[in-house]
Length: 477
Ligand SMILES: NC(=O)C1=CN([C@@H]2O[C@H](COP(=O)(O)OP(=O)(O)OC[C@H]3O[C@@H](n4cnc5c(N)ncnc54)[C@H](OP(=O)(O)O)[C@@H]3O)[C@@H](O)[C@H]2O)C=CC1
Ligand SMILES: Nc1nc2c(ncn2[C@@H]2O[C@H](COP(=O)(O)O)[C@@H](O)[C@H]2O)c(=O)[nH]1
Ligand SMILES: [K+]
Picture (cartoon, rainbow, N blue to C red):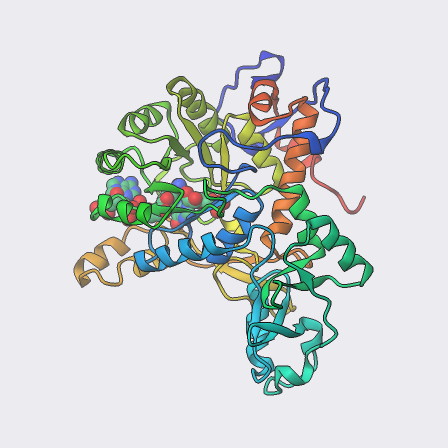
């Protein structure tokens, strides 16, 4: 990456402070851009879902990996639950979405509660594991909650064989005017569901898979307690990536924890953070990190900079850390502060191998929280920071009272925020489509066909607040 007109920034910069100029390009199509990452994570798009309780759970992990990203299960989740999550994600289909299933005797209220758990918005009614009907949101409108699913389901089913390829499936759904269909095996048993959009996406994205062809998933561990034991348990369970995570990653407890994990000689990459300086990168790389997580204070739920004055504007933090990481043969992830697709492109221009997103993805059907509806009828989910009072209280629920009270004094995150689901685009895949189309396009403006070329070719200028504002859409005047 170079600065436009060889400009030397006189202050540290964040994503909104900068822009990229187009360069002469020989990349003929945005679809010709290759977004595979080179940091050992196996992601085929440069997106990592942050280890936040309100963001990364089983459904998120499965869905993002199917499109080529990876989710990190938070350190606060009990080990047995994480192990079960790893198993379930690894059992998930690479093309078909996991169905929501109900029985004919279930109530409409029960089905209504389940529908928002998946973006595809349908439940398959099964008997002896075979689909006999389908229920969508439309079928449930104006129906009493205590009615039975069997009485209101639609039984004119179009099913797809599990041998179907993405294009055939799309064409069949289109020809039969269906948005979604159950997928069945040769015995007629339900295997999954496929939407028209899902079929299209299956042809545009490549799942992030392990050596055995199963979806990938990562998990985070903290720096206290028996770090080696927890890491071993996760490795044993088949985790594809370990993230050693704490607010102040450049501290000796982190370095000791990281050494213990490295001493296990795991066959999976180790990410560690967070830091924002070259010195931090050097120390974590020396202690055994393959990937350094960069970002102090840019997160949407994060109050660290307001509480402490500590942190660093994220574009400069990533730029400096990535430059150091390159010298040492390690990689960096840009963690936090992503609000728009452009921020992902700019993080890659600064040298990140992957970009971590938290709160934005909290506002999706796949995040763990329950859907809420505000007084104007808009759907939202609650998000909260991992250093908020809410998270600290949860994390320390079994801690002795005095120590718990002491820990609760240090609060560096917000405990509740409403993250609205965009109307008609509330699935994480809708957000991924938007981000990845933006990033692909950004690459072609720079004349780059892959992440490394983009980093080499990106030309970045510095803009005023008015320059940033000019780039935003204006619906009126
Ligand atoms: N990227 C960011 O800007 C930030 C991210 N977070 C996220 O919140 C989650 C919880 O992290 P964390 O609060 O570190 O909790 P942890 O449970 O990981 O504990 C942090 C440990 O580090 C010690 N420590 C020393 N200095 C600091 C410091 N300045 N801030 C925090 N801990 C310190 C603590 O000791 P003692 O309590 O005795 O001080 C404790 O032993 C993580 O997921 C983290 O990524 C949190 C804040 C900022
Ligand atoms: N200082 C804090 N940082 C936090 C907290 N919870 C999460 N985080 C960090 O934010 C990113 C995600 O950023 P986002 O802008 O996409 O939401 C996450 O990975 C953490 O590094 C917190 O309570 N305090
Ligand atoms: K912030």
